Amino acid sequence: MKGPPVTDAIAIISGRANGPVVASDEPLSFWGGVDPATGLVIDASHPLKGCSISGAILMLPLSRGSCTGSGVLLDLVLGGRGPAAIIFSEPEDVLTLGALVAKEMFGSSLPVLRVSRNVFRKLSLVGEIAIEDNRIVAGECEVPLAPARAAKLDLAADEQAMLDGAKGEAAAVAMRVICAMAAQQGAGSLVPVSQAHIDGCIYASPANLTFAERMLELGAEVTVPTTMNAISVDRENWRGQGMDPEFGVPAQRLADAYVEMGCAPTFTCAPYLLETAPHEAEAIAWAESNAVVFANTVLGARTTKHPDFLDLCIAVTGRAPCSGVYLDANRRPAIILDVDMPGQVEDAFWPLIGYVAGARAPDCIPLLRGLAETGPDDLKALCAAFGTMSAAPMLHVEGVTPEADLDPLPQAATVRITREDLRETWARLNYGPEEVDLIAIGSPHASLAELRRLRDALGGETTRVPIIATAGRRIIDEARTDGILHDLKKSGVRVFPDICWCSIGEPVFPRETTVVLTNSGKYAHYGPGLSGRHVRLAGLDDCIRAALTGSAPPRMPDWLAK
Image (cartoon, rainbow, N blue to C red; front, side):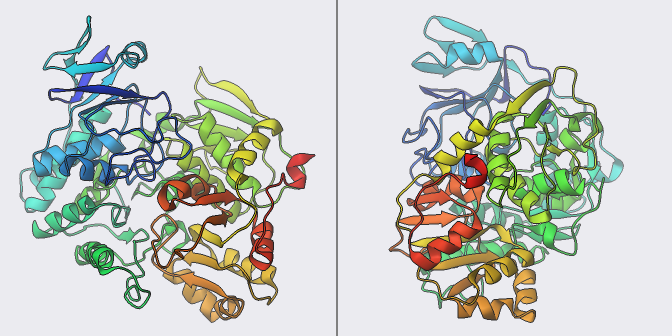
């Protein structure tokens, strides 16, 4: 992840601020990690859990995980609950974009700085920091603060015309945001994209709706084929499901706004399962972390992890900053992860190894070596868990990724992922009460093969514990045609379109639930903070067993225990 050259301290977004220091050397996803209503850190696994970032000088190496963090930050800023400033030690896009939109569209300034790792370490130890126009003051320590040196952005004639307003105010606003991001990323030009995928349609906070309706008022209309992520309600049925209109109405308005701007109502977090999935080397603009990682890693397409709001700006203009993994040089592995592969693994291995790989490569692209033969659903689970723990938009999987033979960077270290590493992570993700109240399938959205396997594993038996699966409309239609949906319903499984586990709310999520069992590494990580429940990781067979018996004793799988 490259950006402009870093002096000891540069102002990506300038401004004055002061406040107490809240610092961590572990990246944080704002979505699923920070409560937009309170400013409290809710990521159950993060060192800052329970801390308030409101009014603080927040210090992080960078963000990780979800692209929706930009929307959470915008909501915090507009609601007066945001940090006083953010200081990073690495190039960062998601939260920076949220701060850029706050300034560009709403006139709210949030200083964003990038400092050297040495300065970051020193500043993280002080109690309070004051940020002035040209310096950072921390007690008796002063650090000169320079403006960011942006690379010259070479715009084509039609791009300059959009920036100047020739295509309307919405396109001009979108181009200003894109150019600002290009500058902070060190991009010298923009790249045309063939398609986009919108992540900002999830009602993560009121700011998502504020942004979308503002762009709609300005006349925004997408100019490239654009799909939509899962949304926060079953668009056609939420009222009958008992959803609170105070949430359901704005959530539907948000989805409707994007549809009105020309986006296709696909409502899936797995756009790679659609017929419009991109081809190798195709330049696209996707948001949604799991989809971005899958597109680069498995399909060989090219997209950076675009933050919410930037996704729409790119869809409106058809242009993205030509930086990051759009460039050959930035797709090379920076670390090699050799896996001590257990024998005869089950499906739970794939989210587990993705999670561990993301933790080992939180800010760079790894090459994962030594894996057994994989299938599409294995890779889907791996990519989703990796994208939860890492800020990187891709990884190379030996024998899978089209570019897996790219030479690693000269400084790339080789790190072994041992079985003990896997056991330690499994013990943490599988830990929790034995009695189970709910089974969660479909994070990311289930494929047809996954729904078929779920049906076959149940074998016609009726569940004692509810199973809820989420899937895209296209997959549900295919499951209905094949008779899979009928069989699942007969066993008591509820299959929901449009929503996913990252956006599901009560009462679709049963209020009486205390313990959730899931086969998703992504939801095992985010679920506790999002739902306030115990969420445990297990393989599909254990999920089925728990659905039929009500119990899932925490255990080490046989393939991992050996």
